[in-house]
Image 1 (tube, rainbow, N blue to C red):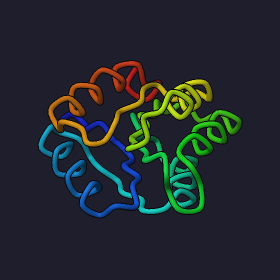
Image 2 (tube, helix red, strand yellow):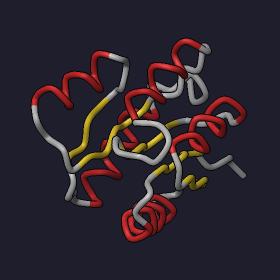
Image 3 (cartoon, rainbow, N blue to C red):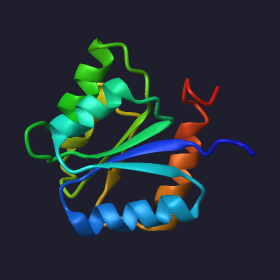
Image 4 (cartoon, rainbow, N blue to C red):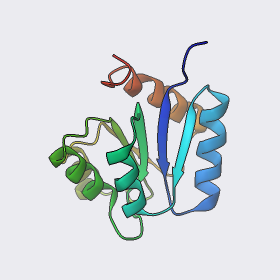
Length: 127
């Protein structure tokens, strides 16, 4: 039996977390959930994830800060930032620190599944 790809989903909104978790599990992913920025950061350091989907506005640590600090620590997990903020400064700021993609809320779960598959193909854990 082939191992499922692993994804870290971090969002402080339980409804969003549940939607993403159910959508990705239905698409064959093993999902690990964090509800806080610091917890997501720690899980990313400790876990071997094929992908991370992280809300930008998280308690204790912004999504862009998580991405930047992971890169400093040598974590190569591709990150999709999820955010209701879609101003140019936020989007470009997240991409500049190393996020693989930026997904605006609200999003279509099918599109999110497709983006997840696309970026996981480039993951060091999958390659």
